[in-house]
Amino acid sequence: MIDPETWPARADRLRVELVEAGKLTDDRLQAAVLAVPRHVFVPSFYEQNGSPQWERRSREDTPEEWWSAVYANRPLTTQVGQLDPDDNNLLPTSSSAPSVMVRMLEALRLDGGHRVLEIGTGTGYNAALLSHRLGAEHVYSVDVDPTLVEAARDHLAELGFTPTLRVTDGARGLPGHAPFDRIIGTCAVDRVPWAWVEQTVPGGLVLVDLKVLAGIGAGNLVRLERFQDRLEGRFDLGGYATFMHMRNAEAAPIVAPSMDRDAGEARHTTTEADVPHQVWGSYVTWFLLHLAPGAQRVTFGSVTDEETGKPGAALYVTADGSWCEVEPGEPGSSRAVRSGGPRDLWADIVAARELWATEGRPDWDRFGLTVTREDQWVWLDRPDGVHRWRL
Image 1 (cartoon, rainbow, N blue to C red):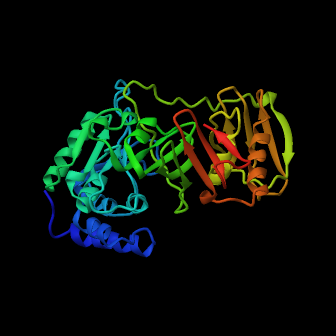
Image 2 (tube, one colour):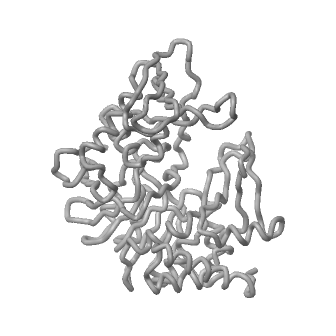
Image 3 (cartoon, rainbow, N blue to C red):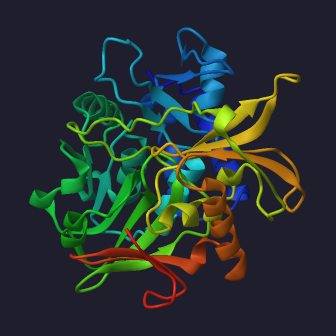
C-alpha cells in the first residue's frame, strides 16, 4: 500500500539532492523520480551495520529506518546470497543508488519513441523510471532470476506500468523484440556480448559497467555507439560506479583465493614508490593493474593491527599463491613490504601506477572500448593508439 502522506515529500527531497549534486538535470527524469515511489520496489532490505551478520529492515519491523533508507541516495541490498547455508540458489541483489540510476539514464540521451532494453531487472525501479519517461510500451527488461522478475512485474503493475519483462540470460539480449535504440546493463560484464551489438540500431547506444576479471571492481561505466561493424565509445567521467556481475543460472560463483599466506617464508623489502598502500581505492590504477597481459584477479583486504584493532597493512593475493603485504604510510615514504609466491605482486602494482603517472594521470574519459565480432580491447586516448589491452 502506497502512503500518500509520506512518500511524495521524501521523493522530492531525493530529487533536490540529486539535482544539487549535478546528477539529475533532465526535467522529464526529475518528473519520473517524483512520480515513481521507490518504496514499492524495496519492501525490505538488508544491512550489516559493522557486523558480518545481515539484518533485515522493513516497513513493518523498522519503519523509520526503512523509510529513511529507501529515499536516501544509497544502494540497498534487497536479497542476500546464501542466507541459508544449505541453499546455494539465493543470488545477491541490490537496488542501486538513485544517483547512479539517473546518471545512467541521462547518459543514454533518451528521446521520445526510443525502445530500450534493460539487462538486469532487479527490483524493477529502473524499469519504472524508464516507463514513466518513455511509456511502458517502449521498455523491455530481462533478468535470469524468475523470482525477481515476478516481483518486479507485480510492483510495476501496482503503479500501472506494463513493460515487457522476460526471464532469460541477459547475455542473449531479447532478440524477439529487437532492434533497440538503447541497451542499458544494470550489471557488470567482463566482455560485451555480441548479441547486444546485433540488437542495437545503427547510431544506437549501449551503456554498461565493464569490470575486467569479475569480482574485484576493476573498471567503470562505458557508453558505446553502434557503428556498422562494431561498438565503440569512452568510459564515463561522472564518477566511479559498480554493479553486481551479470549472472548466469548455470555459472559457478566467483570464489576468491584464500587470504592465508606463509609469512615465515616472506621476502622482506621496502618501497618508496608513489603508490597508496590501499591501491584498490585508486580506481584507474586498479583498472590498469588488471588490464596488464597475464593479469590475475587480485583479492585484497587489510590486516588487523594487533595493538589497535584497526586496519593496518594492505594485503593482496592472487590465485597462483602470490601475495604481498604493504605497511600503511604516505605514498613516496619508506614502507615495509612482505611478499611471497611465484610473482612479485607489489612490482606489478607499482608498474601499473607508474604507467598511469607516465601517461599524465589519465581519468576515465581518456579510456575507451572497442567491441567487434572477433575481438574487444580497451584503449587509452585512441582506438589505434599505443596503449591497447585485449580483453
